[in-house]
Length: 285
Ligand code: AMP
Image (cartoon, rainbow, N blue to C red):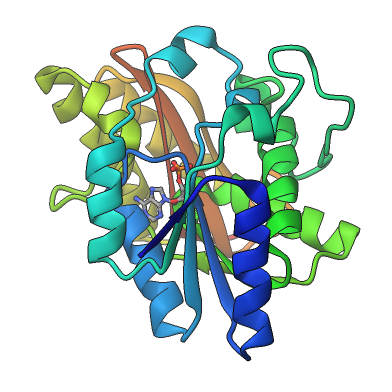
């Protein structure tokens, strides 16, 4: 496995892969790697790409300094994990190269309206500007590639897709399924900050989604099921909604068909998100 940090070497590596007739598969992460990240590495490998993984804890996407400071950092384990799961080139860019002006604001910001508003965009002001800006930079440096993202961050995938389409990046966005613990909890680097009690409570997110998916219901009924399951478990609900999976607009009671349920809850001061498919039926008139 190649290990790089300089932007110039990273760009040259990707150019060389393409020159030799290969395809670059980019997996962007913030480290503290787990099986969810590994599933992206493996998918990129199965697709026959040369896997380039980045680890960069992007300060611009944190709206809370405490969250940024306490974000887990496990560089040694990450390198071993990346190697084990077939990463060809691991890039750990330096903050002063990624954001030379930091902590002063950067002149350029990429802001995705519509799908980037609401949900995580509301609960974490500026979060998606930070995400879109860093992903734009990672994609610019990497160049034409397939870029792998987890559906765990469902809204993030929609934001990246919109940006890639609107700005004309030569990138194929590949959305990959959510990897879960045996009890349903979606893997997340933040899970390690939960107390044993909080860890138990956190299963309410996937339980709420599973309950809502059990049988077709109206949008209002789905919202009520999600919220009740979270509240019963003592989870502070940030949102519990059902949306159009592409536009991320909340569904109405007159809608029927496949939609996406999105939940976010705060447990032990840690914000956790999850999502899953649901089937809606229209309310009878
Ligand atoms: P992060 O390091 O949290 O920024 O995540 C990097 C990438 O891994 C993002 O595309 C995430 O959606 C994806 N990811 C994180 N957790 C999971 C999971 N449990 N299942 C699938 N993908 C995940």
